[in-house]
Image 1 (cartoon, helix red, strand yellow):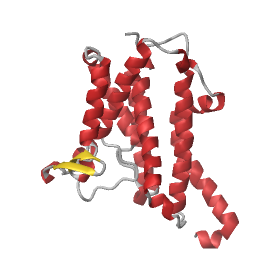
Image 2 (cartoon, helix red, strand yellow):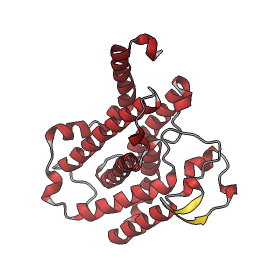
Image 3 (cartoon, one colour):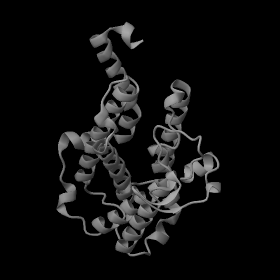
Image 4 (tube, one colour):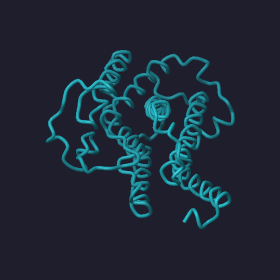
Length: 256
């Protein structure tokens, strides 16, 4: 299998990444309005908002796994993304500890990149279709680890021993203790299986890349090419914009 396509950038992937980024910006703006600025919006606590949020999460993790084969210097890229995740954690702990981010999406993606690097040759021995099905099955079975069960969403198939849920390390793996809290939590399991599913899906699609993969929507594609720096600055930017909007609408006294 060809691991890279050096002569052409797959514009569709940049476009999809840009679309997901814009969706994330909108979702986080809504989250800030509800949980930081106290806007009463019952819809945001409902099923449709949850599906919206999960579609963004699933999309980002799958797409990151899909694109893994296209990247050069996986160790360097993995360290950069993991380091960005650590930066987010440190900043939130210092600036707004009640909204802290422990083991957020960047920590997950960086971890997956670093773990996959030494395993890539062994994983490539598996048929891509079998790897994809296996990874999706494992993701489905472990989706509810955070809740103490094997199972998927509303289906809790098997309770897990409470001894697994001990400390920050077990939280990183997918077994958070009762007192654990993070506003953005992506544990290695089950989300690493979804990253792996994206990797095998990429192998299937990139073995004979279709012309569709080279198509793009230019504005979204440009956004998608700068996903990491945009991710790092979007929450502070959204918070400042919403604060200014609230000040103009209600006055500074009411905001404070």
